[in-house]
Length: 255
Image (cartoon, rainbow, N blue to C red):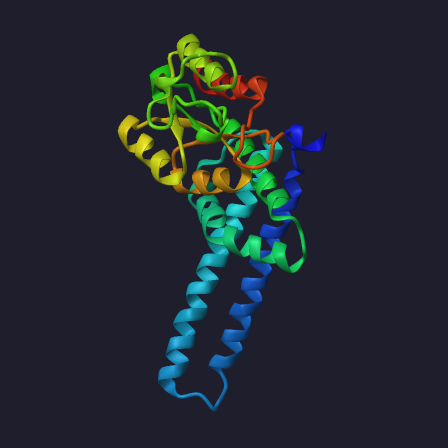
């Protein structure tokens, strides 16, 4: 069944919507610039419009460089240091507008978010990041735990009895094998607490599309590799993950 497979969306979906977003904001800036020269407007009104137009043009210019940096980084599989700031502007500032365009074009939002996650993973993997195991934080969602289990692992994964009825035991085995930090979170608030407590230099996160995209943006500039969870029983209930994809992400950071 399709919902049991991690679907790798084509990166061009998010990149294309990002380019359209820049064009839309550019048209808005041009319209504001046109209003500045309207004889019917007061001086004060024209000054306000001028400041707004200049601000929009500045954001568009930065985001345009960021979009170019994203494409070059993915195509050439290596980072371009001068583009790092503009790339963050493009991703953080225009991501909400990309989702709005997705709704207008009736594109499934999870499909857009999967595309964003793939773009992010490619950008991270283009960088040479080598850290010690204790500097890597693995964030996992609490819905990996069997819903019938009475030993709640949220906040303390060591409460797991390691019965093998769910994939929490696999998370503990990865922690023991690689010496990484692990946090089991119920959502963004607890995930951010783990980041503050452990101060990782990199993060591998398992979550649904919604939580992964928000987590990647919130954790910036900490590099995050996202692994979309598997939902054979529906969202937020007895979920799972691809052990192969998760280990690949861990290996990227710690070798």
